[in-house]
Length: 407
Image 1 (cartoon, helix red, strand yellow):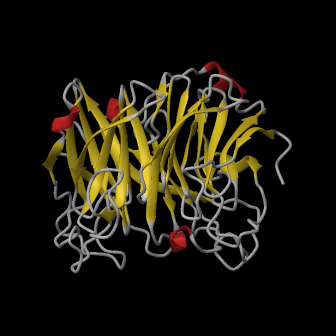
Image 2 (tube, helix red, strand yellow; image 1 turned 120 degrees about the vertical axis):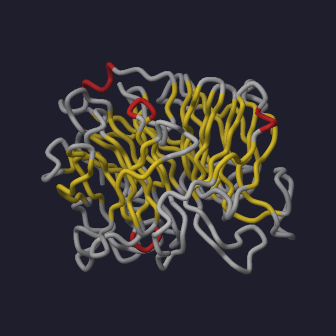
């Protein structure tokens, strides 16, 4: 069940020690000839110098939800959104007293080394890097509060900012908890943000904060300022993530209707729910233009909703690849903001295990699409299409999706 212009060129199943029942495949980051893949059990480093033959370089057992991953220089950062007994990888969950960020030294890809950790209120569901010279600022997104929790007491601000000195990462610490819009009332999902995408070159960030979409001015990375707050109570349930187009003139916000565990790609769910909303930035302010949802109906047993994706770097066009859990991987064109359309897809069909499954993240990097599948492991896809072929001329040295760079 794959479009004619997309083919799977490689597949690497999950392997021990990250192949247990609870070892969910999560996010991806890239650097040179390496791909870094998060997993509830830890993370893996792949050699992708030949994308058709990815090779496991190392795997680190470091259990926690979500273990979303980013890389910067010799540093790897993991988001921990689950109270643990302590910050180290071998800490259990017998005492639920710590959650936040874990930081590793990856200068030796065969033997990553734990450096330190930073506790953050309500943990870190996802995180976003904003480099500033020799300092790396990390925006931490997490839901909350949970009054009975040891790690997530009220009140809970939308964003926390961690400062990591790149020459002395062991001294990383929380330096700010900005109150971006104090008049906002908590949604049914609590306060906090789910995901933030920064575009440092444009001095902008777009935050998906559960009940709201937010455009921020990050000219001063430690003091982000509200530009505009968006609401869409009719169509959006969980504002999940955001993507700027290359020019910084559009934002795609996605809605994770049902939290990713429900079958929302069916005829009973409106096309504007569990979908993407395309906003044009007009005079610096977002204006809604259209919605996109995959056109392929899924079965009642397939969890399916808009999830993590990235731009395909086609000059003069706005094209994304995106994961849809068991809806597979979709490639779609939003150059015409009001009339976005799918131009290719990869889909496995229903997972026979009957549990949460499908593509968690799907990103384009140096000619290929890499998909982290919750149950199945790492997939490498190739799209051959006149619309996307120019992207093969764009070479990136590294790629962390939540920290956009122009191409």
